[in-house]
Amino acid sequence: MVAILAEPRAQMRAMHLDDLDAVVGIEMAAYAFPWTLGIFSDCLRAGYECWVLCRGSEIVGYGILSIAAGEAHLLNVCVAPPLQGQGYGRHLVKRMIELARWHRVERIFLEVRPSNLAAVALYPTLGFNEIATRPNYYPTRNGREDAIVMAMELLPTEA
Image (tube, rainbow, N blue to C red; front, side, top):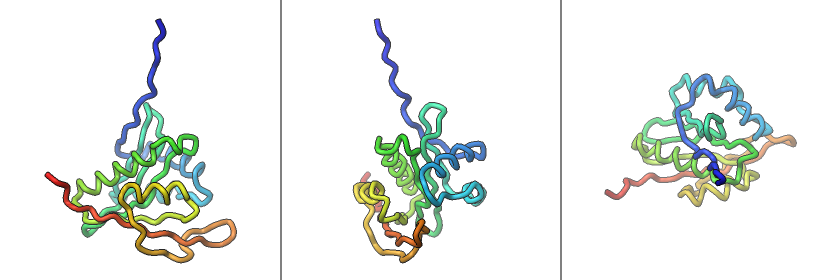
């Protein structure tokens, strides 16, 4: 008899200060211009919705959502580069949308680099629409890159 062990299912949980080394490690591996440890610490201290996606005891991704005045802003969503393209990003964003709904926000905003083709393709499939461009928003190795601004209206769910 052969036992086949399934990979552990990914689970979301609140981010803790003890998670920041792993989170910053993923951030640095994923981005040429990563957020710093201080930025993540500030998000936790400010009371933003900071969540990690875990597979077993391993952190494989995270999301940061700020909420104020009936709106939410998806500030950062990232999956460890070796695990990208496996549905973890979709799972993370869907959970952040659910969290925004739980807070009864009316809309969610985000910015994304046009060069981040996977994210640009993902967000519309989850209900986000392009609403604007922020010129020269992101740093690049050769200057600046615009940001695509997207939003999603969170209409009341059907009972």
